[in-house]
Image (cartoon, rainbow, N blue to C red; front, side, top):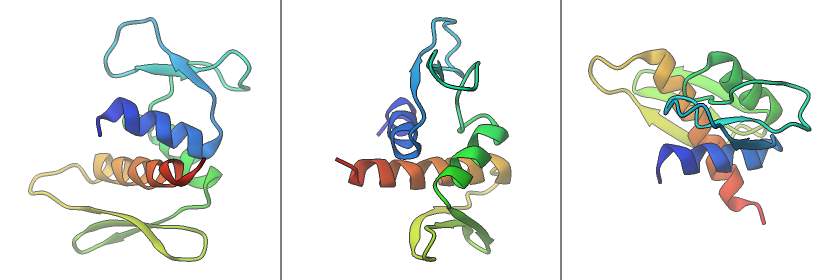
Length: 110
C-alpha cells in the first residue's frame, strides 16, 4: 500500500474529509475539504499536529518501546507496531505508526 492510500484510509477512519491538493507538492497530496472546519494541507505522515489529531480522533494509545512504537486502540489492543530501523527518525516512525494504525481501522470499515 502506498502513502497516498494509507492517508485516504486514515482519513476515512477518522471521518476527516480530504480532497487532492492542486499545489503539486508531493509532500502534501491532500488538503482539508471545503466543508471541514480546518483549512490547509493534511498529511499526518509529515505533520506532527495532523498525526496527533488523528490519534486523538481515533482514541489511539501511542507507546514507544524498545523495538519501535506500538499503537493500541481504546481497549489497549495492539492495532499496529512500527519497528525501529537503524538511524531512523523516531518522530517520523511515530507518525507512520499512527497513520498505519488508522489505515488498519479504515480498512475494516464498510
